Amino acid sequence: MIRWSATLWSALYGLVALGWFFGAPGYPFGPADPAAQLSPLGGIPATTSAPVLAIGLVAATAVALLMARGVRAGRPVLLTLAWLITAVLALVLNDGRVLMLIGYLPIVLVGAPFGLLSMETYLSKFDGPNLNQFALVLGVLLWLAATLNYQRRTAEACLSCGVGPRSMPRWARPAAAARWGKWFAYLAFLVPLAYAVTRWAWFGGFSLGLISEEFLREGQQNGVWIAGAGLGTFAAAGGLLTLGLVYRWGEVYPFWLPGLRGKRVSPLTAIIPASLVAVIVTAAGMGVFTGLVGRVGLTEFIVNPMTFFPFWGLALGGATVAYFLRRRVECTRHEDRVLVGR
Image (tube, rainbow, N blue to C red; front, side):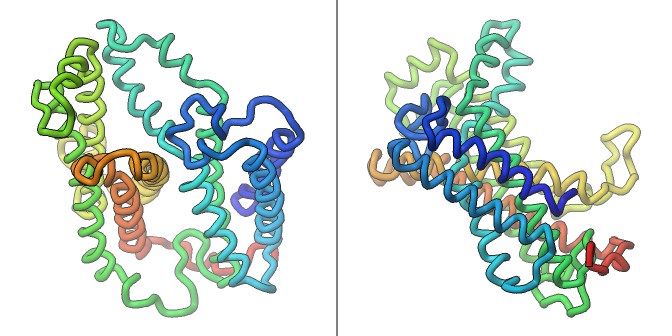
């Protein structure tokens, strides 16, 4: 099913895009988007972006179909196009709304009884443009899975871990991955921590020179910094969990987890959520990054922790790849190097 996943998603989304191209309501991009400032396509009229989107999805469906059928002719071209399509879905069409909606959920569950953010208000945020963002995140993950599946099938590599008949390059060997993976993991820990520190400070009444005193007091009065502190806390916790990708407790459950302590951590237990968060954070970071360019001064741009969100997402992705490379030596399915459907 993995080999056909990108084909099915692209075909379905392409049909919807064709509908938008021919005037169907609900186009989620462009100036009419309620959160256009978050999207790289927010300033592009629908009359321009809708045809490009529809044509692009038709082309993407064709590429996905060729990969699903295991076509070997032009394999380097197909792989290049597949990775390019995945990048466009993740960094151009996607933005930060999925991250915000996921980040606010714990605050809603904990703070709703205290009047911070009601469940009704939260659920009202799941409108067409926001649901479209969730569909795009799903598309990115399916394209990642289908592209890796095609890459491994056509190289006669293990479908589970990617080990093939050729020797692994030096950088991909477990010892090397353990070294460079730590740098990515530390960066993925520090960026959300810096974000959290600013939110905690604003909650405590310290502007840190990043915002005006008037804006600080206004946020204290309307409760915005309470939600901000909650988001910062969850971001910092996520950054701390990232360190599990390079430390022992990411391979064996630690003592403070009753019922699991001492048991081996399945690689997919860490890889799947880490990959999902990496995609969402990178997309959100690119939206923030492009949104600040040209709208704020250089000093404000540099000192804003959210400016570095793209590096958080990319670092988390790098740490996840390093974790995968270290853990794949445990794979016992190297005999799966037979092409599916050959």
